[in-house]
Length: 238
Image 1: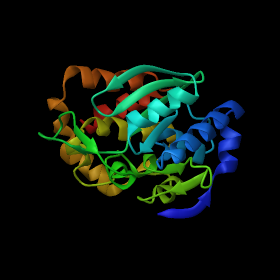
Image 2 (image 1 turned 180 degrees about the horizontal axis):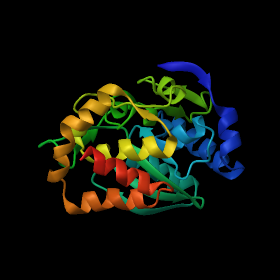
Image 3 (image 1 turned 90 degrees about the vertical axis):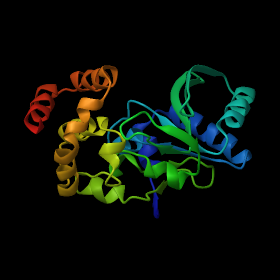
Image 4 (image 1 turned 180 degrees about the vertical axis):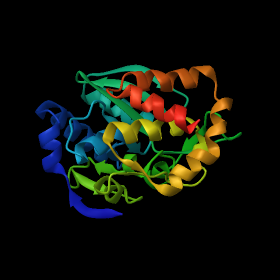
């Protein structure tokens, strides 16, 4: 899973010097607690396609509360939002980070918001939406910039492909149907055949979503440059 690939040069190129400095500091603090901190999700994807990321999402493979407590001792930290999903939005030295505990998710019933429980990075990756968003970058001092790619996301980025991680992905979270189309149009990636088939098979599950969850996804689409094409594609898939 470790692809023996270090992207420190890309981090230097697409993050500000200050962002990089803070990531190195908090990666060191995690390591001092015998934890590992990772940069994850869209930020990693964007850096790998050589774009500047809008958001910085972090996963701590360890106890989130202990980690935050230690951060507060050593740096200026403001916590602006916490959730029952083991996540929090923080401002660390004036940089916004969404930090989450590595966790398992279970969906009962399917399509509902998940129940979460603490876990390790391997299980955390399995709950992600697409392979291209499942790649992690290690922020520990010795391994800083090292890629961890459990689901072959690098290959799918190279081949410009949107692929779900498991066959029940759209049943677990039907909003991923919106996201598959949104990412495919934004990034000019193709939706892989099996993923496309499962979108068609499970598109009726969107009816069961709460209005607020649908509205949230529509708001995200409305902020895209090519929103018309995305809405048109959604309409055709309906």
